[in-house]
Length: 119
Image 1 (cartoon, rainbow, N blue to C red):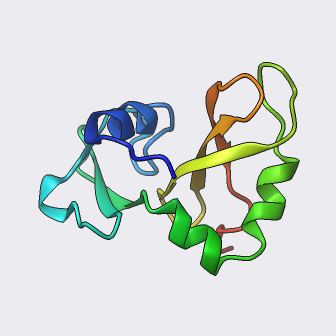
Image 2: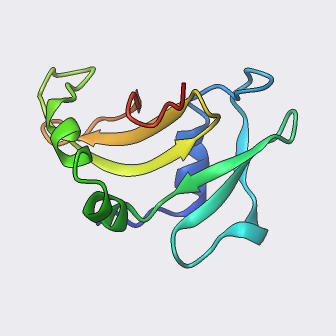
């Protein structure tokens, strides 16, 4: 399991847009950094907050469809199929993102989740 620092999570969050203002400038609200891996992201522009999950081991154990989905995701650089899930963020009811690392070239990228959109 990957253990990410607060700075690493913030850096990776800055690659997606805010659901409200569409900017990409986030921080982790330190008041909500639980030891269980459930954190709270906050947009630095409009102060919108959303859940960020860093305990992917627990998530993969409790969501049986996710490991199959991760095997299907292709790397945006080398086209290798199969990624490791590092963290996920549910930015809004329509936007959830997986922050993944390619198993082939170790490139980090974002994959929009189709499994967590509540439409």
